[in-house]
Length: 338
Image (cartoon, rainbow, N blue to C red; front, side, top):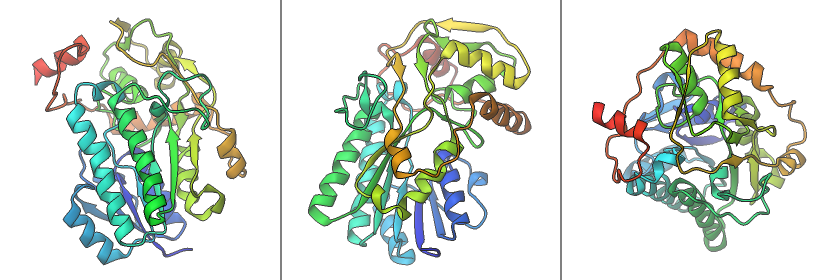
């Protein structure tokens, strides 16, 4: 129903800001909670109320839930860096798991109708392809482990307290509002930032690893609408693009979209899942009226125009790396420059 109060954590970030925008357009009273560690207040859509704060701050959550009486919660706040999560294990679990538990507790205490959680296909690990929701998750990095733990906790909260939940597993999402300055995640944003600075595109390994890159317009509208789709309650959905491309192919496509060529530099390979793409038959059955997916070339052209408009951003090294053994050399260089 319109005018229902909705909380969007991470709503100043990339996917969260787009979900918040769609919720505002649907007539909901949207409150965005974000600590701006990876997002920007300018991303918060007009019509939403912005609260600067930590989604794991229990006292703040209690005040917000009592003040606004949220009907639905969309939990998109996370530090989504799969590769880096091996080296920031404590931060990863505090930020991605314990914060989620605090939010689930608040949702239970205040009788929230629906808790929508953005997980990740990182939960599948090196599973068979294409990855389907029926596969048993086997995450291989702390980020995927944290995401899957939250999924399990939501199921437990439903069994014990009746909390209704919906889980989405997006993957490799790109588009306007992505943090171009993050040196550890979102390869398309990293490539575009490197092009604008005239630096080589850096690729870990030989570049034959594949991903299906998902335009934000193929992801955010479905997440926002889900609270009004009864068949979505208690379900897990892969959401995103079908067609995988290699990182080498992506690098060429990004340079074409940006209208500028730079050298390509292959770095030593890092420990990562080589091939990852998902099946989306289930989400199409439950959300049958979605428009056709945005072609990669079109989505990259749109993002490139925006990237040139906002300009290059200087990446910052992560402060607080906990383990440096086996840290990729290029990331070690970032730390020594700090």
